[in-house]
Amino acid sequence: MPDVLPRFIQIPDRLTSKGGLGFVFLEDVLLANIQDLFPGAEVKGAHLFRVVRDTDLEIEQDEADDLLETVDRSLRERRRGALSLLQVDAGMPARVLNILAENFELGDDLIVRSGDRAAFGRVDAAVPARVLNILAESVEHVEGGNDVIVRTGHRMGFGDWMQLTRIHRPELKDPVYSPQSLWRADEDPEVIFDEIKDRDQLVHHPFESFGSVEAFLRAAVKDPHVVAVKMTLYRIGPNSPLIDLLIEAAEAGKLVAVLVELKARFDERNNILWARRLESHGIHVVYGFAAIKTHAKVCLVVRQEPDGMGRYVHLSTGNYNSGTAKVYTDLGLFTADPEIVADASDVFNYLTGYSNQKLFRRLLVAPVQLRARLTELIEREADHARAGRPAELVIKVNALTDDQMIRVLYRASQAGVSVDLLVRGTCCLRPGVSGISENIRVRSVVGRFLEHSRLYWFKNGGNEEMYIGSADLMERNLDRRVETLTPVRDRDLLRHLRDVVLDAYLRDTARAYRLDVSGSYQPPERAGEGFDAQRFLLAHYAEAKAD
Image 1 (cartoon, rainbow, N blue to C red):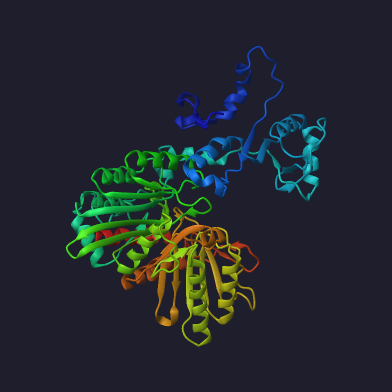
Image 2 (image 1 turned 135 degrees about the vertical axis):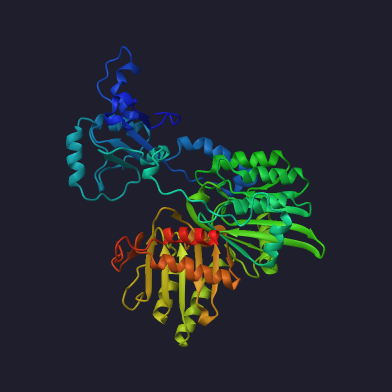
């Protein structure tokens, strides 16, 4: 079925009951009219199947001389990539299934699944679908085999259901809200840079507008004193206003350097198009490293000032993407802190190959020293606990899967450190195990917005520290990506993140689930509708805007 056609076709009003909206599946229309697609042929049967392919880009070091061309070529070959899943409707006969398996060149050690159970290797073509399903349900497990076929009696491709959200039914959607921006779109650049120089500025998406980031970059474009703009771009989005601003800055005579990560999964094609457009306007575009991805989110502005060169930086937990900034929770810090901006400059030198920096003043940078520094910070809490000093930490990430970091957290728990983990997705740590992790609590909040911000807070015996940034506690983030965590040094901002943001998530009883010792998630006890952290933060920032 062509991607250009909608999955859901609206039924004419005259055919619906009570004048409501009605839709029919595209595949049902095709199946009902299959004879018209094959005039003169006898149609004996029609069956649906769906193919999922491996989308990883494998790039060898000796292929990386022209990374853009290598990625571009790999994308063209992706349609012929290794098959990861063949999903077929439950009624497909074995004969047809085997034809598909042979055409997709699946191995002889093929596994067929019905529901969640593994079934068996390739079957005889004469086996009817009914018998095939009986076999699939009776066999609990099969060792070996890399290729998987899934039989299903359900609809396929649930991602298409997102199309339904475009229906105009406001009563079925969340209330519209208007996030505030730190600065107006036409703000005087002097005002923006003076405010950042005076004190650090924090923005919290989507409760606060991504327009703050756009205003910062727009100020760099319009300010005649700005001489250079450097930026990392990971997931840019299809209609990014930042691209036009970067081009405008270059055409205004400013030095513009952009690292475009070509290997951002599912955004490779989009990023290649943006990279070529930037290059066509004379912008210096870097594609990063062949073996690792650049996942850090950094924008550095260099400005000629009366007392010398001034540097301003924005560091974020999320992508420079105005679309996702409306539905992902992310944090961004604007700062002119001399040590942080110096580190940001060193990060760009590292990315462009002009530096082999191993030490950083304030930033925690992967794969250079982020793992080691996080380990030191957690172990410092353990030392405080053993010495009888206040010892506590709160970490909010998307995933916790790195076995080494899990062991470090277990040791901290055993030393008496109070550990709260807010892990939205996969968590391989088991909390509440006697003698190992009884001081660790794990919560997952899944709400209206996708929890995407990463925060690391350490009690540090009363001299607390907090970091925000792009890194999760996964092996890939710690060892195989360029990531940055930046300290929140302004005490007012730190207190806001601790007492308002983290506290709200730790109090959530409406959208949170607790991970128990068995590895299962349980809803917390709640009174009435419970406390909804995201709803609270929407109200909190709206009230701050009104004040």
